[in-house]
Length: 235
Image 1 (cartoon, rainbow, N blue to C red):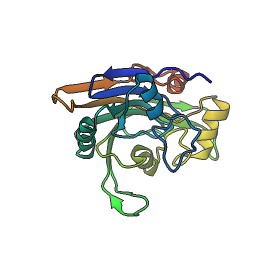
Image 2 (cartoon, rainbow, N blue to C red):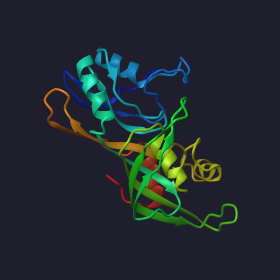
Image 3 (cartoon, one colour):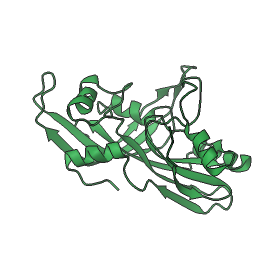
């Protein structure tokens, strides 16, 4: 099957940024099957260049991703991510009516060491909606569209933090709520994880000039959900 070309957002001799499709793994690891196409190999073939991963996005998450074209640029970018010098912003749809804005400061356990790590996430509510659909003992369901800014980069941080706050992301199979996921997938015909990394800001690894990268549009499945809820597009 022919794989479509990836949408390249930025490219020079040091780094490349791409709009990652939802459902594609970033690179092969011990948790993925060998036959899965991965973003690293696909982009490397498209550019005919060797690439170095510098950060990650979950397979189900869409949005802006950066790769380095040199070892030197990779080292600089990985340090920038580790030292929290990269501004990352996401949009997501969650269960419940979230507060206007909030800060989640909650340690997360790291696998396989099981040690706790500091983690902090800020969020802002952009829109809300109540639907007259009964689930369990409730006669209606409520949802919120959020902008999210993780200050740290722990594994599944946004998904875990929002779940702990009783606002799990729709379509999250691991940290979400089965009844609501089923409602969106089967009854509303809105499948997929409702999470997109839409913005990255950082200093260029070579000249330290500010680089600001954005997804040009919402991922198709998230746009369909926003349209269904009759919300304005968040960007």
